[in-house]
Image (cartoon, rainbow, N blue to C red; front, side):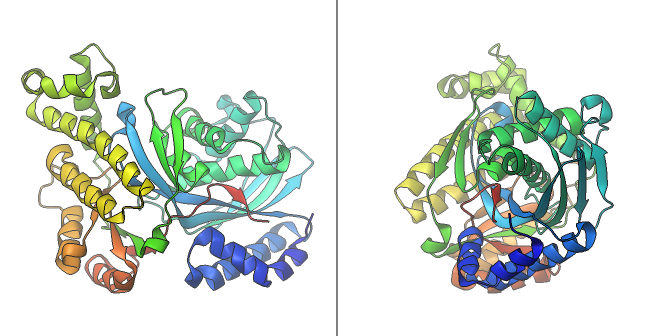
Length: 426
């Protein structure tokens, strides 16, 4: 086992720089990530002392295609990104867990106190306890550890920092106590359980699975107990594009009714056929009965059903394009998905605040700047938040500067799809 001092020396090697490039997929990040790891090692040593430790990483994620299909147990295309939570971790023998996350007070507890009765809603420590306790209940070995975590996954920008955090805890338990053999799919499911049952947030599974499995993945949620997860091999960087995520800085306050309405209207349509969610109704039956949905639910519900059906089709079409290495067809599908979110799903701005339209401004100005090279859409839940665009690498810096002028410095981030989920770097 390597000590903090030994790891510092290894980080200076050419072999480690190649490893950084492999993980983060951007040569411009090699020095940044190396310095970030060294700084994390320094903080860990100052807090916990020198000695044997591990370096681990858990990425944020982005939704590539499949907007608002997961809660209907439909299909999505998602990806891990080259922004992550970085962890310096040490195994402890005294049954204690200490997690120091940069910018926050330390979280400390005993493994004797990890059940649901020891957890409070909306507390980060409940996520840690939830992951550990769920893995224990599944029969995996658990144990104490000390960890220093630092993140460059932008909180609140639709990149799912909470899923990355859950993936990090699962990865720690996997490598420290189970020889790294807990599957990525299991870690994703455990993260969702921790968030749903211990933290108290009723999220779907897409975020956790994209972070834990890594790369570009297709998820079919039809069997909610055993979703089908398929990795898609597609190196975005080698096709001359980067992924730009822009935070339009809209407030998510008071948007719960808007999010709930999407799900309620889709499930209201499914109920007409005696089903819980839309994936339990055939596409043909849904489309044939649009007049019935209009009459019994409402027009917007009918439009959202059309979005669901066509969006699941687009996911499958996008996968075919990627497998055929047909970047032009894939980008065309991205624009069609964005058009459907705007016109049918209608999650671009809140109907209760029609004068506040940050996402619409982001999409419109992106089109103005990029012209025929614009390929993008709303990212995530919508109504406020982020947009994404696939941008030619040579135009990315200029696009970022333009978007930062509109939404503020640091609003636009140039990303790549990273090939790994939760991993032990060293």
